[in-house]
Image (tube, rainbow, N blue to C red; front, top):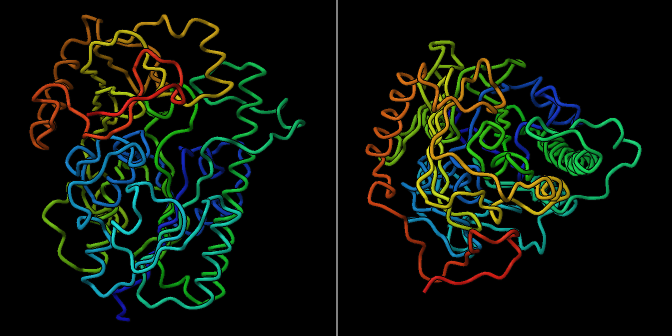
Length: 434
């Protein structure tokens, strides 16, 4: 293995957002905290899509979900245009061995992606994934390696909450402080602790094998929490993600990066670090100018999208340091509730009349004075100039990336499994596209 070929550990969770200890939340995750204190913590990292398969696709192909073809969920019949655009194939050309343990969620057939080894697991909880990863590391992997370790935590269903902790838990910012939501959040915290134990076990094994110094660790998640107004939403509560990187190339020292970045930047960063050519399809930017303090920002704006989750819900967003603009492209007036995971928190909002609320066609938020994006300024005459500028930014991006929404409603592939948008639950009766 050459000096410029570090191992790469991509260790990732499900539905965690930034609700871990290094981001200041009262969620006890000491192993993730220790990783942050030894690496680089990205405070303003965002996914490109607050839904599972599209988000993961963007990170692993370095392009927006609609560009890569992943318009919905892999287990509901959606797929990439070309699985050879997966990061592992570029790394394989550079001499890497690719192994996967646990969750990935970009294909219903694990053999389709092209890993050299996929652990034959029946479930992807940390209690199973972590020991399997530890065994693989201890037995020895061909080096350099790309190892994907994916945990189903903190996806619902959560483990039982700590009854004592419920009384001292704060619900996530977009939601009211009620006993039901406190209980729900306490259960999330229990799941986060299981995630943290799994991550800690894998990182300990990396250390014990003497691989930590020459391994780039990428610790992240797909999108926001599986709570209402988070996962599936283009507000920061939906697209904000934890991202911690540690390893060679400057990713050390317990530093914090406040630059606005996107998960599509990870693929070109790896290429830059390894000094290999970037594939032509990449749409992100290398993070190394930020790490080397050669630049304060690499993006004037970042972009995010939703096409399909359980139901069709086409919408797009552009985010600058100051402003967020969200535009929806469907004619369904109310909330599309099958796209919100069932939960006690969802029930609280439903009882309060959430189903009767109206979604705006456009939303504009001032992220300085309204960081939780609760006051829509799109109809404010004084914001007309900002609104038009953000509209133009979004349209330019859509054209540059050949967004299929520019041609009208985006069809689902034949065989895709969907919910009717008027339903309440993703577990309601579905139909298949024919």
